[in-house]
Image (cartoon, rainbow, N blue to C red):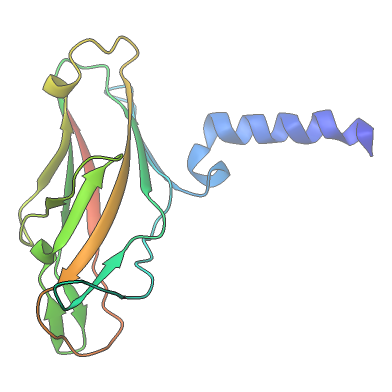
Length: 163
């Protein structure tokens, strides 16, 4: 058994080097023309069960943060989050009711559906020598008015632009 351990560790190391999205259970994109990459830790965000607000209404907070790791050795780059409203059958919840924060910062409002939200840009990291950056994004969804129960879903895209 112990003789197989170095072999198994070698396979895991190769997977992390060449297929990090598979090895780390996330989504991986590589852009060879820019020598850039974008890695998302998980493909979906579970908002869990609602929690009552002191001011009335409910809110949902993501149970796990979304981890984004990216690299772009170019002089200018941006990471943008875009997506749609949350929909369940004939009912919808506007995306701008959702809030986000990076790390342990303050929550900020999302933009309405169809408008990209700049999560990070090269001007925010002027002295980073390695050109490798990461974000831990937390989300919560506030419901200021009643909405019918249902399984609401939305598709969001994280895009890395290098130029």
